[in-house]
Length: 220
Image 1 (cartoon, rainbow, N blue to C red):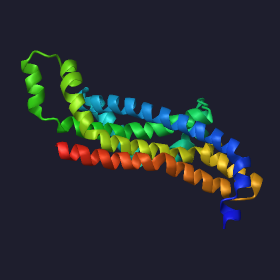
Image 2 (image 1 turned 135 degrees about the vertical axis):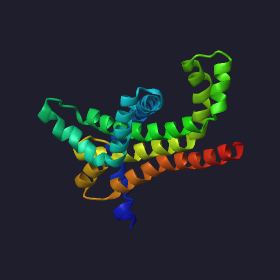
Image 3 (image 1 turned 60 degrees about the vertical axis):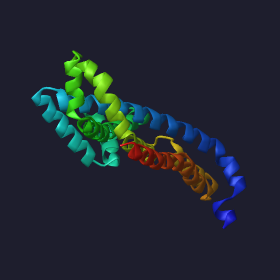
Image 4 (image 1 turned 180 degrees about the horizontal axis):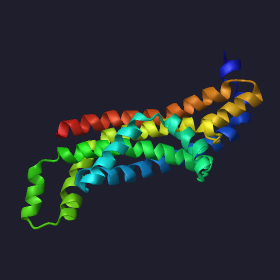
């Protein structure tokens, strides 16, 4: 059992590959999460306060990208876009696919949070003479963000997990490097190590979401 799945000699030889893949996974995850947040915020605001035709476009985007599996979108971006003259690297394709899907989920989360802010808060800001963007920045968004921190964190966890799908476009992320190391060593220990690394990364975030839900739930 130990020799097959937890071979220390194999793990030591494979560690440089795993470390390289881990670093790329972290970069891919962080960039995709940040772009997803920014894109989701823009979509949420346009969907709530934009012109009528833009609201329909945002609604279509959010529904479509929440329905499309990340893997399918990643394959389309990497393999199909070159046929229309847009060739992206494996890293850029993965970021685009992950951020596009994440922004759709983030937009829906933020929309729900903004709509949960009592209308009286907005009316109070209007009485005080605040402009629309001041009301949004000083009153609405701070309260909305407080409400949506747990689901936003949960969505970020999903994005970080979905980075493993980038291996299908030959991006040398953690899973791809672990698979390569397994093939080189003819031993599954690198894959087991990659799984443990994902657990170490994600379990604290899962615990954080649970704690935030408990603390914010008591404060409501």
